[in-house]
Length: 272
Ligand code: UP5
Ligand code: MG
Image (cartoon, rainbow, N blue to C red; front, top):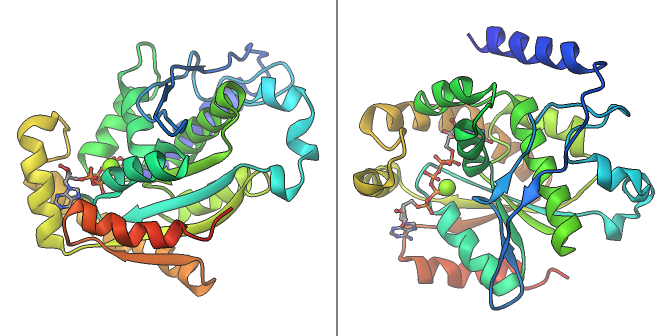
């Protein structure tokens, strides 16, 4: 199944790589917080397929940025700074990201939110594929997720100038890791990985409670079981991969949100 999906995406990419589809820069409806930081995870609206390719062959949303020539010439300091935020379903990634945005001026990009937006976007060719994966706790092919993330990063940089990003819920498996490194590795600077540790019981209880009103198609016992299997089998090896590079800051996420944030604060204390 996964391979079939991969082939579909690969076929789509190869079918469109030379068609000269004109790229459109994703429209960014951003909201500023009191600290001047921005949260865009629910407001990025790609105007074209995430794979639409410009005449120059660049991915939609990237053209305006790279056409200035800044992308390839940027020094390390000017590259967007990235913090990956990982943890089990319901560990509190999104909740803590909102607080980090407020206090440390990052832009929050939730991979899950971007996928859910793409799923409901009229005309998206990937809506059904995304929904099938989300409902079954499987991971969407990286070409889709990575393009949505890259578009959002570029649109945010262009519209707000902010260059500090929390990437929430990504990379979740080997395919994500390799795809990100291939597409984005040279374009960004990874600061560290923020990892929220919480018990499975707590996480499931939180998601089920949220499921009473969230409308999320994966906040139910059956999907949660699958999400947890994927988390243990596919995502934990990614955390271990970064741990081996001493890049992981682990936060105990069992306590109440404000107490958890007290620990998060320390993790961000020494970043420029
Ligand atoms: N809550 C939060 N913190 C609390 C605390 N300290 N004490 C008590 N309650 C707390 O929180 C969840 C709930 O718990 C909320 O009601 C909150 O108020 C409460 P939240 O902050 O939303 O937790 P979070 O870790 O963000 O949980 P989420 O369910 O969003 O995590 P997932 O990682 O499962 O979801 P995501 O949206 O990232 O991904 C969904 C699916 O999309 C994946 O399963 C996958 O199918 C797909 N996906 C991909 O394929 N690729 C990607 O790169 C990303 C996603
Ligand atoms: Mg979340």
